[in-house]
Length: 239
Ligand code: UDP
Image 1: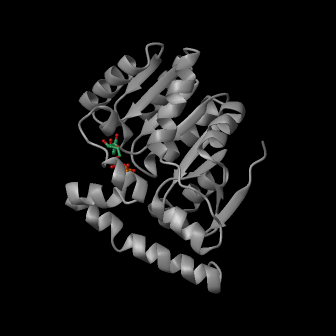
Image 2: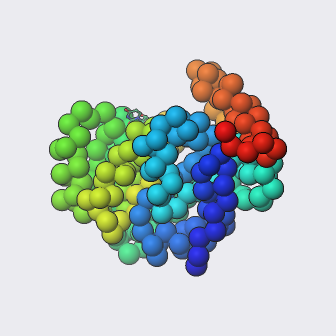
């Protein structure tokens, strides 16, 4: 399977379906970026982050903002929720009991998330668990390398998690690594995902903002501004 990328704000996004994206990364390994408008905005002013996205092995359109943006630009690409993609990867790796590392979130959250996942995936092979509030990065990289996971799930928030998986990928060249934001919070049962109707309509962000009003600052004005920038890109090009 060949990659077919479509561009938005200067960043390539893979146009695979969910299942194709899973097959592709299982075969090729490497870094998966779950791209959203906030990450694009951040990467446009952060060349190092931008480089990580552009050199990633797979970039999936996580969130309605990127799907809408791509549609404005004439590309019909269906969004792939990062949390669902990561959950499927856990399932695929667990089928063969391949070792998985969990890095991120608060200690009790990550503990509970792993415990819940173990109940759903009896053959889950957890080789490393580290909460996301460490200061001694070198220790974590060293331990991760020794644990030798085939899948690394990093939930440290963006862009911290992408910088983390980039460095980790140099130590684990034969692994799949993905940054998954608040997924451990959801798997722990502490944070509820939006009801399916919100997910289907692509307005999960609205539900999360209602539940957690401090997220408002993150979404507005960044989401409408992003759409405006894409409209500008359509007619004038990326500035
Ligand atoms: N987090 C972490 N270390 C940090 C900052 C954040 O482990 O230094 C965790 C945080 O506990 C949460 C996740 O990163 O579990 C990011 O959550 P956020 O809501 O920012 O992610 P989103 O899904 O919005 O990308």
